[in-house]
Image (cartoon, rainbow, N blue to C red; front, side, top):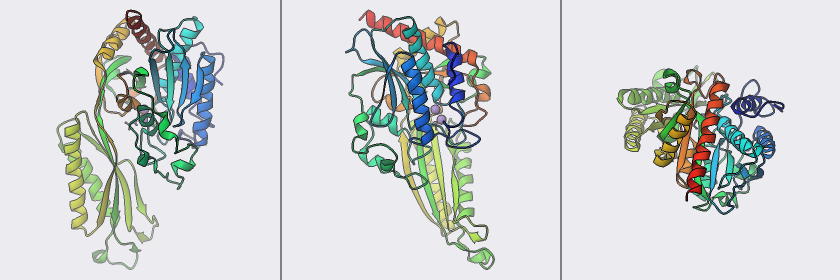
Length: 415
Ligand code: HGY
Ligand code: MN
Ligand code: MN
């Protein structure tokens, strides 16, 4: 698949395109690749073949992450880990995740093709669950690697009623994917910016300074189902108008906060979902973020209080369950300097920017210093089939990544 292409950033883009269609997608006419689905397994196999072609030994860890390892001169030296995620959102773009993995494969292929090795091993990791698009949690498999996942967090069931335990991993050994502290020197993730800044400033790449803090809630609003034709408006406890008022409150509160606070209702479902039945229950999600954890928490508290007040005023029941809590994650200052130097070395002006999007890097920060490289994407669009990255920008990103690796290697040589 995608054979005959010259190694480089453009090949990484072409391989992302190849992974964007069947059998590497679980949805017809678009891209959805859920953790541990058939499409995920097929994509893992394709990436494993490309890793082996680049001179890596390949294995899957206990959290079903795919890991390619390219040995260094000193087998005992802590490895440089380069990665991103192989899963996608529903009807997503082709580059959010896979591009960071496949640029890592290209960087190793370049070393392999030139017969060179760094003082340390390089591990390219394809995380399996960053988006949380199948199970009601996110960053499961990178939290397993970072050693921050608790056993009770594995008690998950997807929307079709399939438990994680029955989805192709061994729950009993899942947490053994944790890497012992000190075995990973640094984690490097290249990722499309998923925002408009680089494009607006005419830049191909940028150094990420940190990743915004995020909270995710599952909200359940309970009313009384009833006959749409015989129940008078005065007697209704309709869960859907109540939920609609709550959704507007989420937007109003985030808009009114003159900061970087953002809040999103991404999924909503009215039950039983029949045209002639007054919805007795509505389930929806809330995603709240800010670069500052205290600002995030204040915004979330106002939102939770506001939706509770709306429920009370409408005599509706409500449960608001926090299902995901990730603190803000600063990137490592020394690695940011190295990234800036690699960007300059690639003939590009250095530019630092924060990430509003979450990434596995924010989880890996618990294990080792992290660095992120952002790559321009057209119109800043992501989580959308229109997501697009220019192969020339991917070539620049690869040159930066290789320059980063060389500089890190040179530091090791000098002790
Ligand atoms: O939600 C996020 O920010 C990431 O795309 N998972
Ligand atoms: Mn991503
Ligand atoms: Mn994403």
